[in-house]
Length: 301
Image (spheres, rainbow, N blue to C red):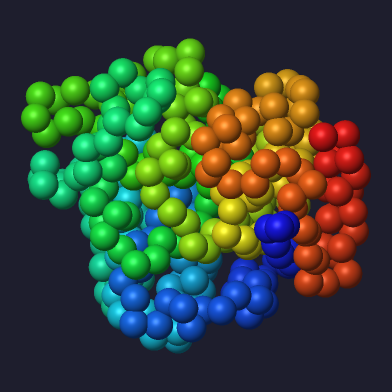
C-alpha cells in the first residue's frame, strides 16, 4: 500500500499548512495527549529553525481538533535550549496558545527511557525522552536542509536526534559526542527512529539550505510544504527536492534510497521500502509541476 505525501506550493504558510491539514483526519487527535517535536537546534532564523508561523498554524490545528494536551519537547544542539526557545518566540507563543514546553536538558533520570535496540550502532544504546513513549500521538515539523557535520541532510529522521539525551544523568556520558564522532552517524540517526512513532509530519520547505546547514548555508526557495505520516517517504522526497535545486556531492550521489539514513530506516522497517511506495498528491497546479519533476527523479530508483 502506498503512503501519501501531499504537497502545496505557497509562500503563505498558514494557508498552505491548513490546506494540507484538511487532507488528514485530525479528529483522531481529539482528547489525545500530543507530543510535538519541532526544529529548534539553534536560534538561527528559518530554515535553520521552525518558522513561528508554522508552529502556530499546526498548534492551532491540533487545538481545533480538541487535542487534550500539546507538549512541545526540545533539546537544542547549538545553544541553551531555553534561550533558543525564548529567542525564537516559542515561549511567548506557548503562553499565548496554551501549550506546554518541555526542555529536555532538564529531565531527571526517571523522565528518560533507556533503550538499546538490537544490532544498533550505538555503543550502549541511548536515552529517549519518555514523553514520546507516553503520548497518544506524536507530531513533528521539520525543515529542509543539508548537514555539514556528517548527517548529510537533516529532515524528519534526523529531527529525532533532539529527542535523545546529550548527557546520561547516571554518569555524564555524552551521547552526542559519540554520535557526531562516529563513522556510523547516519545509521545511528535512523536507529533512533525505530523507538517511537510519528502520526503526522509537516516539512516546511518554502526555503532550504542546499549546502551548509544546519544553522546556516546556501539558500534555495522551493516554496513547497509537504505533509505525510511516513518519515522515510518525507525524507526521500526532501532529498529529491534538494537535488532539483543543486546540492552537495554527498546528497547528490547514488540513488535516493541508498542514502545511509534512508537505507538504514528501510532496513529497520521504519517506513516505506522504495520510491514506488510513494504517492505524491499535489494540491495545486504549481506543486503538480514540482511533483512531476520529483517523480522523474524517482524513476531511476
